[in-house]
Length: 251
Image 1 (cartoon, helix red, strand yellow):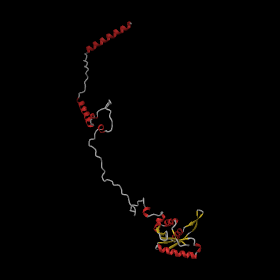
Image 2: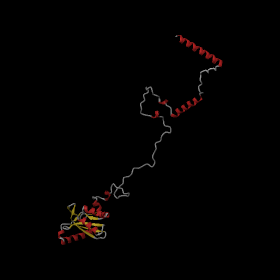
Image 3: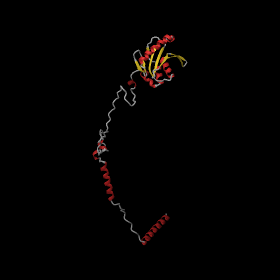
Image 4: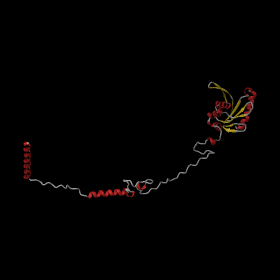
């Protein structure tokens, strides 16, 4: 059912209520049509909540009446004053009740004034357009009215800094350092040779050392003594020992 036709039908019912049920003249009436063009009526009323008497919006009662009848999909909504016939904007509770009944009810159209219509999702989420509501979310597809920021270009091949095949020695490559040449431990950087040359010098010294013959003992070898000479030497030592003994005895 078209929403304009629903408004026309709602005003006729409101007139009947005003004439037949004058006690409801000061109330509001919500007319909700489902996907089968069936119209459900809800009238503003009262209920008890948390021990207090509170108002129940007309569109909340219309949604409840539709759900109690076994229908859950609404396609149109209009709320009017029974007394004046003026169009009212849907209540916040009524919009959320529609959504809780079925999420597809966000597509339901509703009158917000005599000439203006809007879908429930925009009213329920606080107004604005669909593109602004989706801003900041990425659901994997394009959203009408949204422009994506271009991603920064990334080079396909990363450039690697080229380095010399034979880097200079550390002594020759350091820059920005002041060297005190008067230091007694100072050594001219030009005298510092690359590691290859230094290792070559050590290798030459090692090879030369291998060619030098092992040192020999310079002490002369003692001649071997004959038995007669050994006996003679023993008698001489015995004679000296006896003389030392007699000398000590006299003292």
